[in-house]
Amino acid sequence: MQVELVAHNPIHSVSGIGRYVRELYAHLQQCIAVRIVHPVNLPLADRFEVLRHFPVGLSQHQPGSIVHFTQIMGCAQMLWRPFRPAIATVHDLGVLVCPEDSPLHNPISRRVLSVQLAGLRKMNYYAVNSIQTRDDLIERLGIDERRIHHVQLGVDIEHFRVIPDAHSRLAATYGLHSLDERFNLLYVGSELPRKNVGMIIESLAILRARGYPVRLLKVGSPGGQRWRDLLIEQIVRLKLEDAVIFFDVVPEEDLPLFYNIADLCVTATLLEGGFAWMVMEALACERPVVATTAAAIPDDARPAVSVVPTRNREALTDAIATCLDNSELRRQMGQHGLNVIGNYDWSRTIRELLQLYAIIAKESL
Image (cartoon, rainbow, N blue to C red; front, side, top):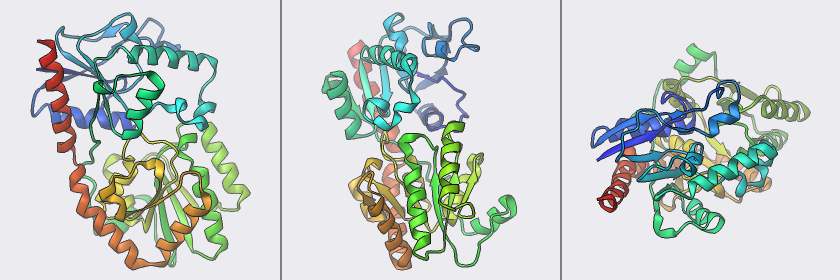
């Protein structure tokens, strides 16, 4: 069995997709023949970004290999350069199911997306990380549910772990010192509309008005300057300049340190393709979490996460306050997360993916 993982960016990319490809490659190569292949782009693709969405082939493709598209981008080539057998991982359907993402798209990008989705329909099979994405593929794109397989996302539990000296290490490297008895809230991710970071800022303002000594550590690039500008405007309007600290570029090796100093991790996400990366990583670091229902928290992890209705600011604020008021509750939540995270390591992901590859290989004989 030979598998080709299609990667649009270098595998050392810090994006979620980059991490996904990197982890799949690292673990699969211990089991089967696997390699990274990159799209062959049209001339001038370096000058015109839109052309990168319409590749004309794959570099060093070997006929007979299982071609695994690791995201929707690039699937358009299945319309004019079909590969067989082919599988695509679908993390989510973006603007089709999350209207808040509409500002990301103009008429051209919407047309590009429609072509990508047309190519996506040509796959033999699909790997999804959540029941919601499976249902969206069936309802929005008419995909036969028998072609859709659930493959759980994983987390590197050796990298994301409890680190006793995290506070001192962050103080030395980032100058991030504890201030009085202030609580640290942590959000890791972009500021794209679907992430709904503005609602966390609103909750922060309410908590401060109630007298909670709390600050937000925001880790990760904004995903575009326009989103950072909007967030800064909101922060200034709510007079929270001293309550939000940005860390845009954090090396992968330092990320667990930020989780470890958090009193509480928070996400107000409107859309996740599976178990949110931030939630998984927080649980591995024994941190309690407040998350919206859109974060797709598995049942066995619920005691580690306070789950609130999506788009409900009051519920988010109250859940954060309840956790901050009760250190024993936070400890119990963190302990439960540590107990269950072993169910979501990459070995499970690889096991489920290999089962799907075996089905594809058998049908290809």
